Length: 557
Image (cartoon, rainbow, N blue to C red; front, top):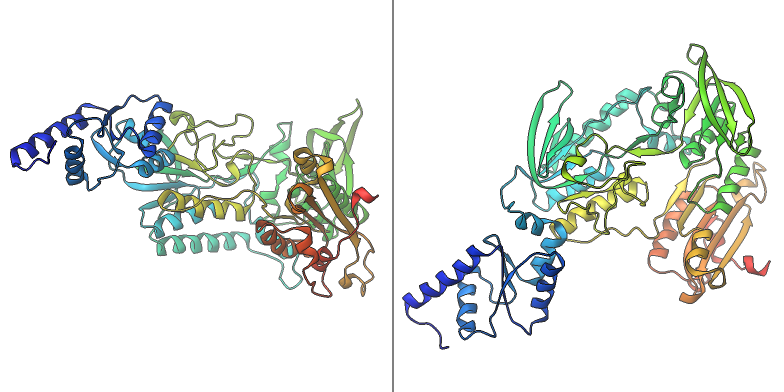
């Protein structure tokens, strides 16, 4: 059909197109041969959403339709998608809307304005990083942050890790003052980025609406197009008689106003071993009670070496025992506690007296009292963690989660920060977080740094015959003057034979493990191979140079 030149004809065509848009929940103007149109139609089919399609190449006045759509929307290309009378755009914009959850909102008729583009629930490292990045990208953002106190105190754990491993730092004091200072610094940083900060507890009441309650009990309501959950975790208790009444957690340890004295640490996590090593380093009598293995999820060869070093330096281990009861014998600062424990392999029951009992058996996500059940977000009932896809998106498309509350993801501050930044960039413009080759360090007395796969995991993924493990004991030069232990430090790398001996696992037990591991993690992210490590010139005398000269393999015996 020739182009429509008279005004009445154009108005009639525009009216027909508008009627199609108004009378169909989903209206797609398409061309039957266009692969991008096929993608969009397949998407709606997958979502089981009925859509009305006009194939412009199969109707007589398709060209006029396309010209009128250009005039109406500014878009001439196909597909041209409308949902509930709202223009979505072409293929890329439709697929992006599906990813970020806004497509579902339109399908549900939720094309309304909100108080905020993004509300972040949780003011920890990940939540702050996400909120500031979103604000930089021009979005209106709010952070809601309220911490429920533990039964025994508060936390400034990372500061004390730094103090523990730095001879130059003074012993920390005035924890309350320090926390207030950090709190104010965070508030100023958010204000500078034009992020609204509210110190209140948040709870969902509708998919896009939350209720906040401040410490005075005042309730306020806010709405947002999207939400990010970054509520973090709190220490898990044992659910045995006397645990909450008489025990402390890692959140409490460094704000105690007195020396803990003889201490029992319950657990085998990195927090348990770090706390035990720290207290033993202060000269205290420390016992660690372990149910099964040390550092579950880490390379067990390295975990056992770290444990052996702790034992040789004064930390006692009670292996294969679980506590059943904690009783107070004498109140005080510290007091005296009696711990009853049972063997996991027999009927044996033991008792012991301690001044302090520290529980470090893991942490549970703070997700149980924020109304996730009201909006349909799926949560692991065992630990409160939230399963997400590789875009940090929950099963509710406009609600995301980052940090320690994620199911089967690293519980590390730098990971949460990176995930928060990249989530904001992806939602409002950019890329996603890479959870592969995440470096980590366990700050035990002999520090353990790792990146990539454990030996057990590598064997499980690739098969024993397809990996090669290079390893060596070494003696740091800095140990020679004080005559420190010889041959207790250990290094190994795990290589994938099927991929040009690419390094897929890095493990280091020795001084300054975090500093050593950080650089090698960058190399692994770039796909470093054994040959490239061999070709790297080492800096002498350092511990890290050991990775440039490794020759002995486990397979060689």
